[in-house]
Image 1 (cartoon, rainbow, N blue to C red):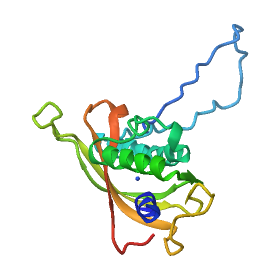
Image 2: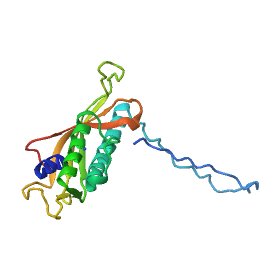
Image 3: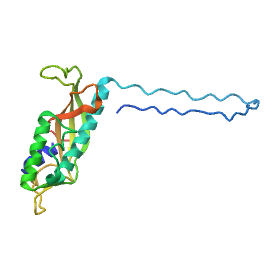
Image 4: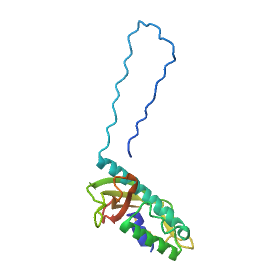
Length: 200
């Protein structure tokens, strides 16, 4: 994945229905000889399954993860140690905290952006038990294509430290977990595994 490989070289919705209320003018309608007009039938949007909702929430967290990576590494000296807590957990939180420490020590900063090009659902398992010991979280695995064409890491002299051979687009399997399930706000990126040899 772009962020992992580039940092290494330098050193991943519920539907809302809007209802409109109709009000009358209070005047009795006049008689009409014209044929009554029939309203076009409406079809209610299908509700999402629990698996679909989980995959959608996970995809949103993956996009937020990439934005957070760039934001936190854009100004390492002023980024708090909790910078990644809102989008990561477990292994990935440790990895990104270590990346932040390395950036602070090396006096590097990130510029540009990393965009999610596509996500493909690989698996959804909502049978976890967060109360177990150790806890087992519901998990969504997405195959993510990310584009870092504008992303760069600069040293204190403003020079790029990313190898010129680094591809702009990369593929990774992103594991997203929710230890607070069914609270959809608790999905976090737990692990990012680059898919060797994959292109997108």
